[in-house]
Length: 416
Ligand code: ADP
Ligand code: ASP
Ligand code: MG
Image (cartoon, rainbow, N blue to C red; front, side, top):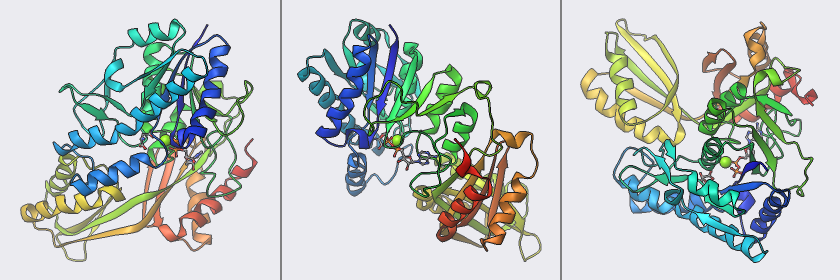
């Protein structure tokens, strides 16, 4: 008898019909004799609706702010509903099942409301219930902070709830059911040429998630890698099938044939900021980035260049479009302290990343990227790299064309 964790995302529990379809997947595992925990998201669109309500009530975006304690109490309610609905549906089909809220498990987090991190899970009680044949239906995305208040794990956080639970339960696998049948060479919504990847390494999946592939939350992959959770991505829109393979996220050495480039990942939720004419003195970059860090604003792609005026520099960086207004607010304070001249912000940018472990040992990946974009007349604003990734910032209007061109240039439509 294996312990299995299954997770169903928003579109997979979008209404009662979809919840019944999800129940069929759960039944198959129970009937195979497994102990099962199911983690669910809120119904598709529900979290966005709840976030908009908190916005209207005066909590603009997650940050380290007392208002986000209430934000979390509101936005966590979507998962409360779906977990209980799925438990009810299973009970009505003759199965023993119960819903578990984050605080009931208890899934413990830190106090960073709106983007909390999991610190521990007291999984004994839930594990016993599962091993006694009761399906544990867990509300994803939520936990309990040291203050005793509900905390949420950041958008897409149900993936992380599922992987964390799989890790503490010592689960044999963690299956993420979504609206695509695996991880693809690029977002399958952007091109028909996208191909499902049979196996992908934790490292590449982590890089893809962190540069914006929405299919798994970054922290879920980090956690799967650290605890060696066997993670699969599968579709809940296909009929339940014991032979469905989806995509397995695993150690690099389990993958026999490695491509040089594995995937192209676009991120449309980017904004570029340039701080113009910063006095070229020690401490000014520190003043800018310390203030942004204090406001919990993540930044990326930093470039410093000489300003037209001698003795001054321009500092550019990218941030999430959702964080742009707060970044501008933060930098207004810094202007008083260091006296830069002005600020430019551009929302019409997108980051395109090429990811692949093969880059560690093969030359020419960057030149193919730059040549392809040049041939298509696409201008690059910024570049950043890691050992297994190259990202460029371009105009968002050109982003889809760039993805398709790069997908073609690296021969990814031939991946099987
Ligand atoms: P869920 O609601 O099930 O958590 P998400 O919307 O968070 O689902 O993630 C699934 C979506 O991720 C897909 O519909 C797809 O458009 C998107 N996606 C982005 N990049 C990829 C990729 N490389 N492979 C598969 N899906 C991707
Ligand atoms: N419902 C939450 C969200 O929309 C968490 C999740 O779906 O993973 O972000
Ligand atoms: Mg998701």
